[in-house]
Length: 77
Image (cartoon, rainbow, N blue to C red; front, side):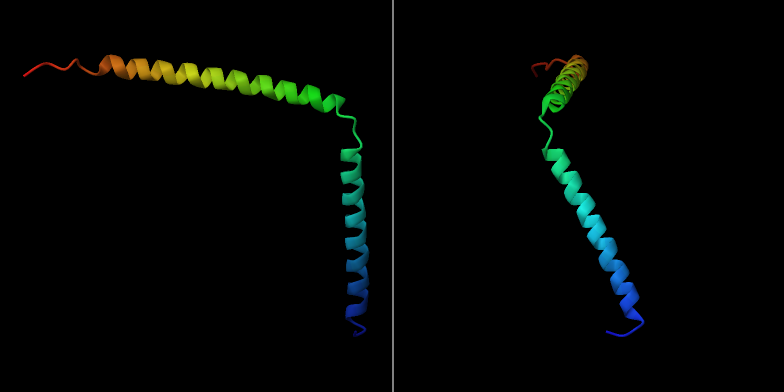
């Protein structure tokens, strides 16, 4: 290895090692939680999803009924 690349290589190895260690620690901390707060968050998002689904259903039913009322009744020839 040349003398010009050695400091860059050392710096990149130290930076990569530090980043890898921080990611590893964050991953371990994420899995060390007991899940109590996570259950509440999941229930809140489930409630939000249900509300959005109900609102979307009401919107589409209203649009369908509006479109249905504008279609003329067929007349026999």
